[in-house]
Image (cartoon, rainbow, N blue to C red):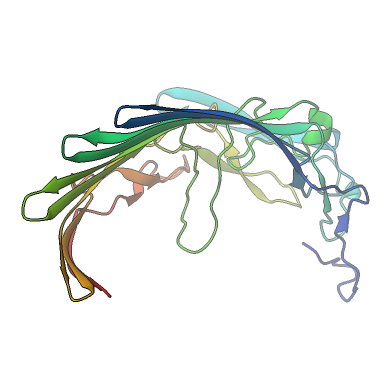
Length: 309
């Protein structure tokens, strides 16, 4: 891609930029409230966001009408049958040499996200408590599929489901095969003052398990894409990993002398020694399907001393 095989020495790229290209735009509305009663403070926050004109890079000269169905994948996932078709260009004559693409705004498409969060903080006897919980619903909509869709193949990275969920795919070294979408998250921190100037801290974090978008690789014969990871789950989030719950704790004691403070501490990470699966094999053709590819690190203890001047 990016090189014309019939003119490999050309200094002109087969890729292009739409002359009408504009910056994507996000519309947002939010509202919040805060209430104080006694030693406690509570709050709530809700927001709505809509992303329009996102950037995309479709192949030049091709629309959904230029694709033809080439075959289908079928089978069963956890007792649920699937039968999904895949597509490829009907004729290679329309493909720009070098698989030229056009950087443009994605018309007929938008994303909506609704978020609600509640927080509470206060004291109960010798304990200082902070807690929060949040809900997020992030979805994509195809109001004009003729302009918003090029290849009709539903893949694990482009489900093409109107009203379906959107998931982030973090890149970079060590990120693995993460499909990030958790609708529910929550957390709490408790600080407790103990005798002998000891302080105990416990931190809990919980979230919904990330989606497992099962796929099957199909050799579509597409000269611009080759094999495609066809989404065989009904929706991107039809199956999810187990919910995650982590509890960390610290016990510390601070001593002050001559303008310095010395804090000795003991930390415990993943106090419950949970072994929650964070990533799992998603290719339905693998014998190792659903085998964990990453789990939470085991319980770890750490002791240390910090000095501040």
